Image (cartoon, rainbow, N blue to C red):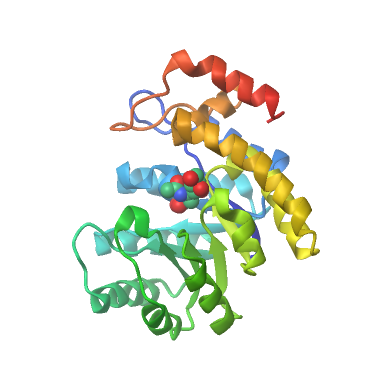
Length: 289
Ligand code: NAY
C-alpha cells in the first residue's frame, strides 16, 4: 500500500455521463505510462461529491475490472449520507478493494464523537480497513493530534490521507505512529511529505506526471534530496500552470491533447475554455507530458 497513487480523474460527457472507454484509457495511462503504484478512486479529483450512488458504483466496478490486480486500489466512500457511505463501502469491499477511505463528514459542524461514530459504523459494516481522508481546506474539519490519536486506536484505521500544509502535525503523527500509513495529499508539497517520511502520496496531478512524483519519492528515499528538489521544481512549474488554467479541466485537457479521452468535468463545474487549448498544447510540449 506504499508509493504513488493517482487520485483518479473520471471522464464525463457534456451530459454528465461517465465515458466508460475514456475512464479505461485514463486508468491504462496511469498503469502503463505513469506507472503509479495505485489508484485512489472516487476522491475529490473523481468529482465524487457531484455523482449519484450508481455512478460511484459504476466507477468502482470499471476501475476494478480494468486494473485487474495490477496495482493497489483505495475506494473513497465517504459521504454525509452515512447509509450511502456504508452501501458504497460494502460494494467496494465485495469487489476486492484493498482498503476503504472516507472523507471526514462535512457541511454540518459534526462533533468529534459524531465523526468517530461515522468511521466506526463504516468499519463495522464492511470489515474493511479505513484510511481517514483529512482535507481541512475543503471540509472545514481540522482534527487535532489528540483526535487522530483516538481514531488511530482502532486497528482497522490503517492510516490517513493527509491533505494539509501543517508539517508540524505531520511530523508528530509520523513519530507517534510509525506503523500507520500516511499519504501526502498536496502534490506541490510532495517533497516535504517525502522528507517527513510519509509512506506514499495521493494526488490528482499524478494522472499526468506520476512518473515525476515517483522520481521525487525514490530520490528522497535514497537521500538525494537536492536532486528531488529539482524534480519538484519541474513538477511545480506544471502544477502552477494547471492551477492557473483550472485544475481538473486542465488535467483532463492535457490527457485529451495526448489522445486519451478524458472527456470534460461535471456540472456545476464549467467546462474547459477552448480558448486556452493552445496554452495546454504548449504545456504538453514544453514538459514532454
Ligand atoms: C482527491 O481526493 O482526489 C484528492 O484530494 C487528491 C489531492 C488533491 N486535492 C484536490 C482537492 O484536488 O492532488 C491534490 C491537488 O489537486 C493538487 O495538489 C493540486 O493542488
